[in-house]
Amino acid sequence: MVSLARRNLFHDKLRFVITIAGVAFAVTLVFVQVGLFLGLLDNASITIENIGADLWVTSRNTPNVDFAHTFPESYVQRVRSVPGVARADNLIVWFMQLSLPTGAQEGTLVYALEDFKAWNLPWNVSEGRLEDLPRGDFFFLDDSATRRYGPFAVGEYREISERRLKIIGRTDAARSFTTTPIAFMDTSLAQELSYQALRGKTTYVLVKLAPGADVAAVRAEITRRLPYNDVFTKAEWAARSRAYWVASTGIGLNMVLTVFLGVLVGVVVVALTLYTSTMEHLKEFGTVKAIGGSNADIYRILAEQSVIAAVIGFGVGAVFALAAGPAMEKAGLKLIVTPDFGAVVLVGTVLLCLAASMVSFRKVAALDPALVFRG
Amino acid sequence: MTVLTSQNVVKRFTEGKQTVEVLKGVSLDARRGEIVSLEGPSGSGKTTLLSILGCILTPTEGRVVIDGREVDLARPQDLPAIRRKSIGFVFQQFNLFPALSAVENVEYSLNVRGVKGKAARREAERVLDAVGLSDRKSFLPRDLSGGQKQRVAIARALAGAPPLLLADEPTANLDSHAGQQVLEMFRDLARRENRALVIVTHDPKVRSIADRVEIIRDGLLAA
Image 1 (cartoon, one colour):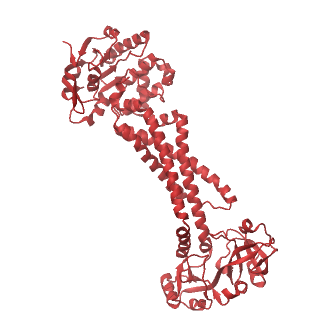
Image 2 (cartoon, each protein chain N blue to C red):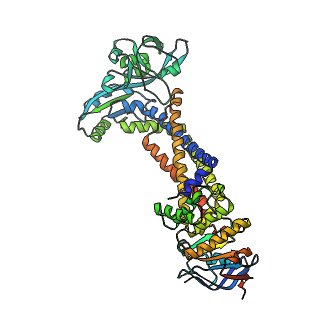
């Protein structure tokens, strides 16, 4: 069957390229904006997602995993005695000052545990042995610290809270939303470094449930025993940490606005190029009507053109967005694009292009086929 | 066999408070194999009459029957179906689709008529052969001469075997040689394919192929 839609679309190459460029621009923008947003949010909860805890006990109203408040470390005993709890340990998350060889001071976010391996923290060790951490003034540093602190090597020394510590390990992929580099050390060392704030204190209790335990019941019992603390599941705690940054920084609104504007530009470009093409081909549409074509035949032509533009534009835009990924990584940004999201963007692109074609359809639907008789 | 019957066709157009009566009671018939030339000065109502006979416009009053089917004034939405089945058009400006080749132009009109796939391609090639353009079937309209374009347009009108062909000034944009070729083709095809052909024209050469000449003036056929 002859596709008048396809042939007309490809016949005017310049207009076709402009249409594709408009769609590709919008698609690229959506992928990059949302991908960066998801990457940033991923950093907000990546430690929570990877730590092997089913429940988190926090101090009341802790807004996110980075901004912890302390409570007595002895509370862990109350949690350990709750039926259904297989294991519970204190986790300290605390900001400390790190001194660089240049003398400059930088912040570091310290994660302190007694037994890191039991909690899958850190989940990606590239150098060193975690079991060596309690044996001295030692710490692990995440590779992402290179961007903020400059290069470092295992075996070097840095000062944290004015105490000289040795870097005995290196990790990868541990991030915080604030981009503050993460360091891992033994609990007692962390409590010594921030003696006034952390002596006898913790910021979280991590809970692993026994097989078959009733999550709701365990949670309720912990809440009863610790009425001045909050208890979250892993998923809830991760969502809360992410939501804090979306609400308090405006990045959510920024993303929505940018995506909206990008989509608007794309839709306007498609609507405009389709409309100008339709106006130029008005006599052809009149001829289609004169030879017996219905409004449905006309809309099929316009719809086919907009779907072709949507699919090709999406492909080009997606390629650009994926190509931007490595460049973003080099800049320390994470771009997360999932297949599900890709499918949503594709469907959205097609629907918006079809909607854009309605502008042209309204013009052609009202077309008087008698215009084919005019010279 | 009578393919076209129109009786006392009246057409009025209303623009704001003004009403203009373009056709004042026209009756025109055409039979299979017959060529009717419709002549008249500009503004006489030729194109309006052609539009009504071609089921592009509905008459204000009167009766039109195409291929045994009465045109229902109350249902203009049925007109495309009548055009698809029973009417082929040849336009003054050819009105070919510039992005489609000659054979694709013909094939597309068959697709609109519900003929698809290989059957459409076969019929398109057949009618192109009938108008002597087999060797130009892959050419785009921009690569065809005026006469060749009009022959493609004739092939498009013939495809699908509509019993009634309506031509609006088919030789107006052609030189005299090409125009004469097109007229001879019209005559041969109308006879061979047994179609009724109504030609609206200013060209006196059309009389040489017409079985009947009707003159329209001020919305009425001259007696």
